[in-house]
Length: 111
Image (cartoon, rainbow, N blue to C red; front, side, top):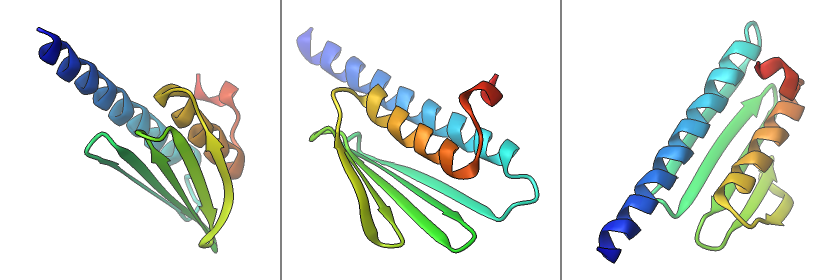
């Protein structure tokens, strides 16, 4: 029974990550009409989330190590920040808020 709960937990977490990344993609698509923005993400076996984001000549990449609970942001291939987090939600929130700041949208515009 414990094994089943373990797998259910990780399936729920994986679904949460995928849903959050899709939500962010939809937000960027809506906010970027007329702009040249490229957004892509990958959830690697529930251990790492990689988000690539390009606007104009700026290339940004977020690596979220889920096992180590650390988010690393690189800007044009140089580390911009490294932040330890205490949950998947807080790590994804850091990525979301940073992207919103870059493309110039606020949390209020989401709703």
